Image (cartoon, rainbow, N blue to C red; front, side, top):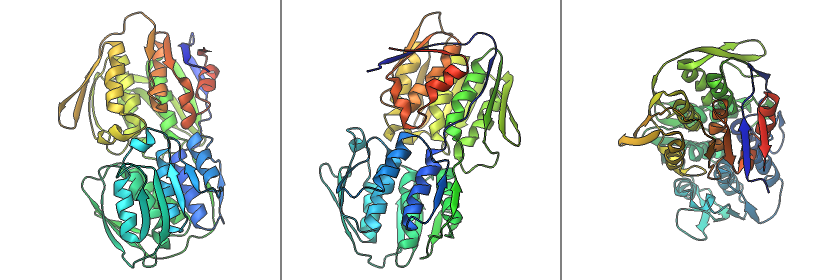
Length: 408
Protein backbone atom coordinates (compact mmCIF):
# COMPACT_ATOMS: atom_id res chain seq x y z
CA UNK A 1 0.00 0.00 0.00
CA UNK A 2 1.31 3.44 -0.98
CA UNK A 3 1.98 5.51 2.13
CA UNK A 4 3.99 8.47 0.84
CA UNK A 5 4.32 10.60 -2.27
CA UNK A 6 7.68 12.36 -2.54
CA UNK A 7 7.54 15.40 -4.79
CA UNK A 8 10.34 17.37 -6.39
CA UNK A 9 9.73 20.40 -8.57
CA UNK A 10 10.19 20.76 -12.31
CA UNK A 11 13.22 22.61 -13.60
CA UNK A 12 12.69 25.69 -15.72
CA UNK A 13 9.29 27.13 -16.49
CA UNK A 14 6.15 25.48 -15.10
CA UNK A 15 4.16 25.02 -18.29
CA UNK A 16 1.22 22.69 -18.91
CA UNK A 17 -2.35 22.36 -20.10
CA UNK A 18 -4.36 20.54 -17.43
CA UNK A 19 -7.81 19.05 -17.97
CA UNK A 20 -9.34 19.42 -14.54
CA UNK A 21 -11.78 16.91 -13.07
CA UNK A 22 -15.46 17.77 -13.28
CA UNK A 23 -17.07 19.47 -10.30
CA UNK A 24 -18.34 16.95 -7.78
CA UNK A 25 -20.52 19.65 -6.22
CA UNK A 26 -22.40 20.14 -9.47
CA UNK A 27 -22.37 16.45 -10.36
CA UNK A 28 -23.76 15.25 -7.03
CA UNK A 29 -26.61 17.74 -7.13
CA UNK A 30 -27.39 16.82 -10.72
CA UNK A 31 -27.46 13.11 -9.83
CA UNK A 32 -29.97 13.65 -7.01
CA UNK A 33 -32.18 15.88 -9.16
CA UNK A 34 -32.05 13.38 -12.03
CA UNK A 35 -33.15 10.63 -9.63
CA UNK A 36 -35.99 12.81 -8.32
CA UNK A 37 -36.98 13.46 -11.93
CA UNK A 38 -37.47 9.72 -12.39
CA UNK A 39 -34.15 9.21 -14.13
CA UNK A 40 -35.28 11.16 -17.18
CA UNK A 41 -32.18 13.31 -17.40
CA UNK A 42 -28.79 13.18 -19.07
CA UNK A 43 -25.67 14.24 -17.18
CA UNK A 44 -22.57 14.79 -19.28
CA UNK A 45 -18.97 15.07 -18.06
CA UNK A 46 -19.84 13.29 -14.81
CA UNK A 47 -17.09 13.71 -12.25
CA UNK A 48 -14.65 10.83 -11.73
CA UNK A 49 -14.29 11.85 -8.09
CA UNK A 50 -14.93 8.99 -5.69
CA UNK A 51 -17.76 10.92 -4.01
CA UNK A 52 -19.63 11.25 -7.30
CA UNK A 53 -19.01 7.71 -8.51
CA UNK A 54 -20.13 6.45 -5.09
CA UNK A 55 -23.37 8.46 -5.19
CA UNK A 56 -24.07 7.28 -8.72
CA UNK A 57 -23.71 3.64 -7.62
CA UNK A 58 -25.77 4.05 -4.46
CA UNK A 59 -28.65 5.65 -6.34
CA UNK A 60 -28.83 2.50 -8.44
CA UNK A 61 -28.59 -0.05 -5.65
CA UNK A 62 -31.53 -1.68 -3.90
CA UNK A 63 -29.62 -2.86 -0.82
CA UNK A 64 -31.10 -1.93 2.52
CA UNK A 65 -27.80 -0.85 4.11
CA UNK A 66 -26.05 1.97 2.31
CA UNK A 67 -22.48 3.11 3.05
CA UNK A 68 -21.80 6.77 2.26
CA UNK A 69 -18.13 6.22 3.21
CA UNK A 70 -16.50 9.61 3.91
CA UNK A 71 -18.66 11.66 1.54
CA UNK A 72 -20.56 14.49 3.21
CA UNK A 73 -22.80 15.36 0.26
CA UNK A 74 -23.62 11.68 -0.24
CA UNK A 75 -24.68 11.28 3.40
CA UNK A 76 -26.74 14.48 3.56
CA UNK A 77 -28.30 14.30 0.08
CA UNK A 78 -29.24 10.62 0.37
CA UNK A 79 -30.78 11.16 3.80
CA UNK A 80 -33.25 13.62 2.28
CA UNK A 81 -33.69 11.63 -0.94
CA UNK A 82 -34.46 8.34 0.81
CA UNK A 83 -36.76 10.09 3.28
CA UNK A 84 -38.94 11.86 0.71
CA UNK A 85 -39.14 8.83 -1.57
CA UNK A 86 -40.20 6.61 1.34
CA UNK A 87 -37.34 4.14 1.03
CA UNK A 88 -36.43 2.04 4.04
CA UNK A 89 -32.67 2.32 4.37
CA UNK A 90 -29.92 2.11 6.93
CA UNK A 91 -27.45 4.84 6.06
CA UNK A 92 -23.94 4.71 7.52
CA UNK A 93 -20.38 5.83 6.75
CA UNK A 94 -16.80 5.82 7.93
CA UNK A 95 -15.88 6.39 11.57
CA UNK A 96 -15.24 10.07 10.82
CA UNK A 97 -18.54 10.40 8.94
CA UNK A 98 -20.36 9.03 11.98
CA UNK A 99 -18.77 11.85 14.01
CA UNK A 100 -20.09 14.56 11.69
CA UNK A 101 -23.40 16.08 12.85
CA UNK A 102 -26.63 15.59 10.91
CA UNK A 103 -29.21 16.60 13.53
CA UNK A 104 -30.23 19.85 11.80
CA UNK A 105 -31.21 17.94 8.66
CA UNK A 106 -32.88 15.04 10.47
CA UNK A 107 -34.92 17.40 12.65
CA UNK A 108 -36.12 19.26 9.56
CA UNK A 109 -37.07 16.06 7.73
CA UNK A 110 -38.92 14.79 10.79
CA UNK A 111 -40.91 18.03 10.87
CA UNK A 112 -41.93 17.37 7.26
CA UNK A 113 -43.14 13.85 8.08
CA UNK A 114 -40.10 11.60 7.74
CA UNK A 115 -39.47 8.72 10.15
CA UNK A 116 -35.75 8.65 10.91
CA UNK A 117 -34.06 7.00 13.89
CA UNK A 118 -30.50 7.27 15.17
CA UNK A 119 -28.91 3.83 15.55
CA UNK A 120 -26.12 4.97 17.86
CA UNK A 121 -25.41 8.48 19.12
CA UNK A 122 -28.21 11.06 18.98
CA UNK A 123 -27.57 13.59 16.22
CA UNK A 124 -25.08 11.51 14.25
CA UNK A 125 -25.09 8.68 11.69
CA UNK A 126 -25.80 5.83 11.26
CA UNK A 127 -29.47 6.43 10.51
CA UNK A 128 -32.50 4.20 9.99
CA UNK A 129 -34.83 5.80 7.46
CA UNK A 130 -38.40 4.49 7.27
CA UNK A 131 -41.67 5.80 5.90
CA UNK A 132 -42.49 9.32 4.80
CA UNK A 133 -45.93 10.59 5.73
CA UNK A 134 -46.31 14.15 4.54
CA UNK A 135 -48.02 16.08 7.32
CA UNK A 136 -48.84 19.19 5.32
CA UNK A 137 -46.19 21.29 6.99
CA UNK A 138 -44.47 23.58 4.52
CA UNK A 139 -42.69 26.20 6.63
CA UNK A 140 -39.35 25.34 8.24
CA UNK A 141 -36.73 27.32 10.11
CA UNK A 142 -33.23 25.92 9.67
CA UNK A 143 -29.86 27.05 10.98
CA UNK A 144 -27.74 28.21 8.08
CA UNK A 145 -24.40 28.69 9.83
CA UNK A 146 -23.36 25.03 10.04
CA UNK A 147 -23.49 23.39 6.61
CA UNK A 148 -25.13 24.53 3.39
CA UNK A 149 -25.44 20.85 2.45
CA UNK A 150 -28.40 20.52 4.82
CA UNK A 151 -30.16 23.36 3.02
CA UNK A 152 -29.35 22.01 -0.44
CA UNK A 153 -30.63 18.57 0.56
CA UNK A 154 -33.96 20.06 1.67
CA UNK A 155 -34.27 22.29 -1.38
CA UNK A 156 -33.80 19.48 -3.88
CA UNK A 157 -36.64 17.44 -2.39
CA UNK A 158 -38.88 20.50 -1.86
CA UNK A 159 -40.75 20.27 -5.20
CA UNK A 160 -41.91 16.75 -4.30
CA UNK A 161 -43.50 17.81 -1.01
CA UNK A 162 -47.33 18.03 -1.22
CA UNK A 163 -47.34 21.78 -0.53
CA UNK A 164 -43.79 22.64 -1.47
CA UNK A 165 -41.49 24.28 1.07
CA UNK A 166 -40.83 27.68 2.61
CA UNK A 167 -37.37 27.56 4.14
CA UNK A 168 -36.38 30.33 6.54
CA UNK A 169 -32.63 30.46 7.13
CA UNK A 170 -31.58 31.46 10.62
CA UNK A 171 -28.21 33.01 11.38
CA UNK A 172 -25.31 33.90 9.11
CA UNK A 173 -25.66 32.08 5.80
CA UNK A 174 -22.53 30.06 5.18
CA UNK A 175 -21.41 28.91 1.73
CA UNK A 176 -24.26 30.75 0.02
CA UNK A 177 -22.86 30.09 -3.48
CA UNK A 178 -23.56 26.37 -2.91
CA UNK A 179 -27.20 27.19 -2.15
CA UNK A 180 -27.33 29.36 -5.28
CA UNK A 181 -25.79 26.48 -7.24
CA UNK A 182 -28.50 24.13 -6.01
CA UNK A 183 -31.26 26.55 -7.01
CA UNK A 184 -29.66 27.11 -10.43
CA UNK A 185 -29.51 23.38 -11.11
CA UNK A 186 -33.11 22.96 -9.96
CA UNK A 187 -34.10 25.70 -12.39
CA UNK A 188 -32.13 23.97 -15.15
CA UNK A 189 -34.38 20.95 -14.59
CA UNK A 190 -37.58 23.00 -14.68
CA UNK A 191 -38.17 23.93 -11.01
CA UNK A 192 -38.60 27.57 -10.06
CA UNK A 193 -37.89 29.06 -6.63
CA UNK A 194 -37.48 32.44 -4.99
CA UNK A 195 -34.73 33.50 -2.59
CA UNK A 196 -35.61 36.78 -0.86
CA UNK A 197 -33.58 37.99 2.10
CA UNK A 198 -33.31 34.83 4.26
CA UNK A 199 -36.32 32.93 2.91
CA UNK A 200 -36.40 30.41 0.05
CA UNK A 201 -39.79 29.39 -1.37
CA UNK A 202 -40.29 26.34 -3.60
CA UNK A 203 -43.79 25.42 -4.75
CA UNK A 204 -44.95 21.85 -5.38
CA UNK A 205 -43.95 21.07 -8.99
CA UNK A 206 -42.24 18.47 -11.14
CA UNK A 207 -38.71 18.27 -12.39
CA UNK A 208 -38.47 18.16 -16.20
CA UNK A 209 -36.10 16.04 -18.31
CA UNK A 210 -33.00 17.92 -19.39
CA UNK A 211 -29.35 17.49 -20.33
CA UNK A 212 -26.74 19.00 -18.05
CA UNK A 213 -23.00 19.25 -18.66
CA UNK A 214 -20.90 19.42 -15.49
CA UNK A 215 -18.26 22.17 -15.43
CA UNK A 216 -14.61 21.59 -14.54
CA UNK A 217 -13.92 21.98 -10.84
CA UNK A 218 -12.81 25.41 -9.59
CA UNK A 219 -11.74 23.85 -6.30
CA UNK A 220 -9.28 21.67 -8.23
CA UNK A 221 -8.13 24.74 -10.15
CA UNK A 222 -7.07 26.37 -6.89
CA UNK A 223 -4.08 24.02 -6.53
CA UNK A 224 -2.79 25.05 -9.95
CA UNK A 225 -3.17 28.69 -9.01
CA UNK A 226 -1.03 27.93 -5.97
CA UNK A 227 1.62 26.34 -8.16
CA UNK A 228 1.76 29.36 -10.44
CA UNK A 229 2.14 31.63 -7.41
CA UNK A 230 5.10 29.57 -6.14
CA UNK A 231 6.85 28.94 -9.47
CA UNK A 232 9.64 31.20 -10.71
CA UNK A 233 8.03 31.21 -14.14
CA UNK A 234 4.70 29.69 -15.12
CA UNK A 235 2.20 29.30 -17.94
CA UNK A 236 -0.72 27.08 -16.99
CA UNK A 237 -3.83 26.59 -19.13
CA UNK A 238 -7.02 25.19 -17.58
CA UNK A 239 -9.60 24.45 -20.30
CA UNK A 240 -13.33 24.71 -19.73
CA UNK A 241 -13.46 27.08 -16.76
CA UNK A 242 -16.04 29.85 -17.05
CA UNK A 243 -16.02 33.41 -15.73
CA UNK A 244 -19.69 33.14 -14.72
CA UNK A 245 -19.64 29.81 -12.91
CA UNK A 246 -22.16 28.16 -10.61
CA UNK A 247 -19.25 27.36 -8.32
CA UNK A 248 -18.42 29.63 -5.40
CA UNK A 249 -14.78 28.53 -5.50
CA UNK A 250 -14.34 30.63 -8.63
CA UNK A 251 -13.53 33.24 -5.96
CA UNK A 252 -10.00 31.89 -6.33
CA UNK A 253 -9.60 34.32 -9.24
CA UNK A 254 -9.93 37.35 -6.96
CA UNK A 255 -7.90 35.86 -4.10
CA UNK A 256 -5.01 34.84 -6.30
CA UNK A 257 -4.99 38.17 -8.09
CA UNK A 258 -3.69 39.47 -4.74
CA UNK A 259 -1.27 36.56 -4.29
CA UNK A 260 0.60 36.80 -7.57
CA UNK A 261 -1.53 35.06 -10.23
CA UNK A 262 -3.19 36.76 -13.21
CA UNK A 263 -6.22 35.01 -14.74
CA UNK A 264 -6.76 35.46 -18.45
CA UNK A 265 -10.18 34.24 -19.58
CA UNK A 266 -10.38 32.91 -23.13
CA UNK A 267 -13.10 31.22 -25.18
CA UNK A 268 -11.65 27.86 -24.13
CA UNK A 269 -10.95 28.40 -20.42
CA UNK A 270 -8.32 30.29 -18.43
CA UNK A 271 -4.63 30.99 -18.81
CA UNK A 272 -2.63 31.64 -15.64
CA UNK A 273 0.52 33.72 -15.38
CA UNK A 274 2.54 35.43 -12.65
CA UNK A 275 2.14 38.97 -11.35
CA UNK A 276 3.04 40.99 -8.24
CA UNK A 277 2.15 39.41 -4.89
CA UNK A 278 1.07 41.43 -1.86
CA UNK A 279 2.54 40.61 1.55
CA UNK A 280 -0.65 40.70 3.64
CA UNK A 281 -4.09 39.24 2.97
CA UNK A 282 -7.34 39.47 4.92
CA UNK A 283 -10.15 37.33 3.58
CA UNK A 284 -13.60 36.10 4.60
CA UNK A 285 -14.01 32.47 3.47
CA UNK A 286 -17.71 32.25 4.38
CA UNK A 287 -18.70 31.65 0.75
CA UNK A 288 -15.73 29.48 -0.22
CA UNK A 289 -14.47 27.53 2.83
CA UNK A 290 -12.92 24.79 0.67
CA UNK A 291 -10.30 27.29 -0.51
CA UNK A 292 -9.00 28.02 2.97
CA UNK A 293 -6.48 25.18 3.11
CA UNK A 294 -4.99 26.12 -0.24
CA UNK A 295 -4.58 29.74 0.83
CA UNK A 296 -3.16 28.94 4.27
CA UNK A 297 -0.51 26.63 2.82
CA UNK A 298 0.32 29.07 0.04
CA UNK A 299 0.62 32.11 2.31
CA UNK A 300 2.87 30.16 4.67
CA UNK A 301 5.13 29.31 1.73
CA UNK A 302 5.06 32.80 0.19
CA UNK A 303 5.74 34.59 3.47
CA UNK A 304 2.35 36.34 3.38
CA UNK A 305 0.63 37.25 6.65
CA UNK A 306 -2.96 35.95 6.47
CA UNK A 307 -5.99 36.91 8.51
CA UNK A 308 -9.07 34.82 7.82
CA UNK A 309 -12.67 34.61 8.94
CA UNK A 310 -15.67 32.56 7.87
CA UNK A 311 -14.02 29.19 8.49
CA UNK A 312 -16.27 27.83 11.25
CA UNK A 313 -17.52 24.97 9.05
CA UNK A 314 -13.97 23.61 8.67
CA UNK A 315 -14.28 22.00 12.10
CA UNK A 316 -16.80 19.42 10.81
CA UNK A 317 -15.26 18.49 7.47
CA UNK A 318 -13.30 15.32 6.60
CA UNK A 319 -11.14 16.26 9.56
CA UNK A 320 -11.00 19.26 11.87
CA UNK A 321 -9.32 21.31 9.18
CA UNK A 322 -8.46 24.20 11.45
CA UNK A 323 -6.57 21.94 13.84
CA UNK A 324 -4.90 20.07 10.97
CA UNK A 325 -3.69 23.35 9.44
CA UNK A 326 -2.43 24.60 12.78
CA UNK A 327 -0.30 21.48 13.12
CA UNK A 328 1.01 21.26 9.57
CA UNK A 329 2.05 24.90 9.09
CA UNK A 330 4.40 24.39 12.05
CA UNK A 331 6.43 22.20 9.68
CA UNK A 332 7.25 25.39 7.77
CA UNK A 333 7.89 27.42 10.89
CA UNK A 334 4.60 29.29 10.55
CA UNK A 335 1.89 29.70 13.19
CA UNK A 336 -1.91 29.81 12.88
CA UNK A 337 -3.81 31.09 15.88
CA UNK A 338 -7.34 32.23 16.72
CA UNK A 339 -6.74 35.81 17.84
CA UNK A 340 -10.41 36.58 18.61
CA UNK A 341 -13.44 34.27 18.28
CA UNK A 342 -13.75 33.33 14.61
CA UNK A 343 -10.69 35.32 13.50
CA UNK A 344 -7.49 33.46 12.65
CA UNK A 345 -4.08 34.92 11.88
CA UNK A 346 -1.19 33.09 10.29
CA UNK A 347 2.30 34.43 10.71
CA UNK A 348 4.59 32.84 8.13
CA UNK A 349 8.28 32.02 8.38
CA UNK A 350 10.98 31.44 5.79
CA UNK A 351 11.23 27.76 4.88
CA UNK A 352 14.63 26.28 5.67
CA UNK A 353 16.30 23.96 3.22
CA UNK A 354 15.06 20.53 4.19
CA UNK A 355 12.58 17.96 3.03
CA UNK A 356 9.12 18.82 4.30
CA UNK A 357 6.65 16.11 5.29
CA UNK A 358 2.92 16.77 5.60
CA UNK A 359 0.17 14.61 7.06
CA UNK A 360 -3.21 14.49 5.34
CA UNK A 361 -5.61 13.39 8.12
CA UNK A 362 -7.68 11.38 5.59
CA UNK A 363 -8.48 14.71 3.92
CA UNK A 364 -8.00 15.13 0.18
CA UNK A 365 -7.65 18.91 0.42
CA UNK A 366 -4.79 18.70 2.91
CA UNK A 367 -2.80 16.63 0.40
CA UNK A 368 -3.39 18.93 -2.55
CA UNK A 369 -3.03 22.19 -0.61
CA UNK A 370 0.50 21.35 0.57
CA UNK A 371 1.74 19.59 -2.59
CA UNK A 372 2.58 22.84 -4.48
CA UNK A 373 5.20 23.68 -1.85
CA UNK A 374 7.39 21.17 -3.69
CA UNK A 375 8.16 24.08 -6.03
CA UNK A 376 10.33 25.46 -3.20
CA UNK A 377 11.65 22.34 -1.49
CA UNK A 378 11.15 18.57 -1.80
CA UNK A 379 7.91 17.55 -0.13
CA UNK A 380 6.53 14.31 1.26
CA UNK A 381 2.74 13.89 1.31
CA UNK A 382 1.54 11.07 3.54
CA UNK A 383 -1.40 8.87 2.47
CA UNK A 384 -1.51 10.41 -1.03
CA UNK A 385 -4.42 8.20 -2.17
CA UNK A 386 -6.84 10.52 -0.34
CA UNK A 387 -7.02 12.66 -3.50
CA UNK A 388 -9.35 10.06 -5.04
CA UNK A 389 -12.20 11.75 -3.19
CA UNK A 390 -12.26 14.73 -5.56
CA UNK A 391 -9.26 14.66 -7.96
CA UNK A 392 -8.12 11.08 -8.70
CA UNK A 393 -5.67 12.16 -11.40
CA UNK A 394 -3.90 14.83 -9.33
CA UNK A 395 -0.53 13.08 -9.06
CA UNK A 396 -0.58 12.15 -12.76
CA UNK A 397 -1.28 15.78 -13.64
CA UNK A 398 1.67 16.90 -11.52
CA UNK A 399 3.90 14.61 -13.55
CA UNK A 400 2.49 16.09 -16.78
CA UNK A 401 3.57 19.48 -15.48
CA UNK A 402 7.12 18.25 -14.88
CA UNK A 403 7.08 17.29 -11.23
CA UNK A 404 8.84 14.12 -10.17
CA UNK A 405 6.40 12.04 -8.10
CA UNK A 406 7.73 8.96 -6.32
CA UNK A 407 5.22 6.72 -4.55
CA UNK A 408 6.50 4.47 -1.80
